Length: 61
Image (cartoon, rainbow, N blue to C red):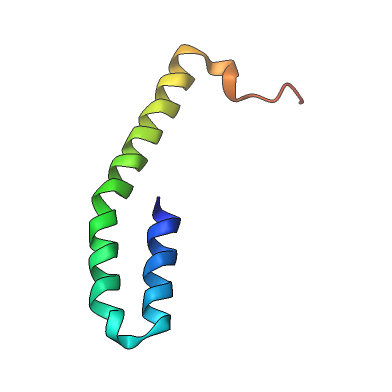
């Protein structure tokens, strides 16, 4: 989500300076979703490490 928002804003900004306001609005609109996605992903990782710690090991030592 973060990459798509940043790439879209960069494309708009580089295509024409007239789209600066739109590019800024897109970044601001994506910001809450990016934060929520990070919190959800972090929570899932912490949960998995707690209930099944060997989930993140490769087996090679």
